[in-house]
Length: 365
Ligand code: OGA
Ligand code: NI
Image (cartoon, rainbow, N blue to C red; front, side):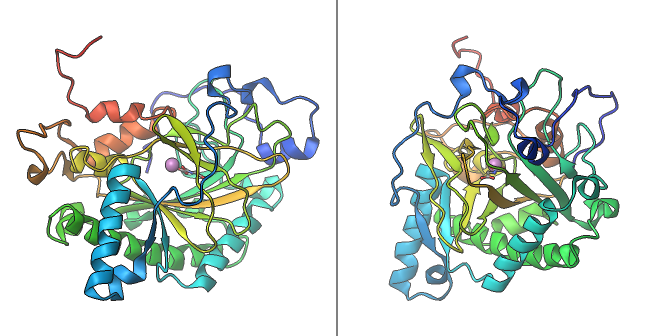
């Protein structure tokens, strides 16, 4: 994951959000209070259950020809119009879904000193802390994070793998193997919806990079002033997000300029298209901006897997998706270059994708 930057980064004091919550300050510290235009009360769409598409994965794998075709069309529509969908019947054992949630929750419930044995150094993205903070005046997210590189093995930092709770590492490993298979399978079905051969991404990606991030959002007395996680798009090809059972609604995606909440479905996984797939598909499938908001009384946990090509792989729009009507919108670069750019910039909507865009000299300034 993140290379350690050569120049020291001054981030100032970062409050641990769970400790802050325990201390119950009468006002929210200034560093967490968002500017007016970023506050989550603005432009929230009414929750609508039927909005974000639901994909029944078992119909893709085991369904009749008709089932497969209906589901595949739904998948294509989800990728094209939403960039987000929820997968049900994804084939990952319920007991594994429950155990990863349990170890993640138990980790966050440990005393601060225990968690701080695995610190996320400023400018890096593995360990416990707040990622993507680069200056003393940057607004902070109402969130504690714990992240680990998983695959290939050389991105692992064994010093950051917690000893407590017991079974943490083992559970993360087993879970990550299952999620990896799911990503590989989803990418096959996605390839077919693009008229490409099923194995195209698997062949292109090499030994795919995989990382896991657990986000814990404590309740916040003023959810109208803070954000759980700043608006961003993911740098991955695909992201798989598991929401804690009974978690409050927290994830929102930007659709037609409105923030649409993602209603948790028990045991479903939320999948989204990352920047890498947007570039590879020449923008046909979009990496959609999203954020997390907090709740006055309820906490929320999410377990997020990022799946991306190996760092040395050169990326750019696939020739099959470039023609006269769809001119090439993105340049070529390696995934390592993109990753470096991504992890050395704060989360700011879809800004990181500017790195990949071909700038036309006729564009308006
Ligand atoms: C992420 C993310 C949203 C959430 O970790 O990239 O978008 O609901 N998380 O935790
Ligand atoms: Ni995200």
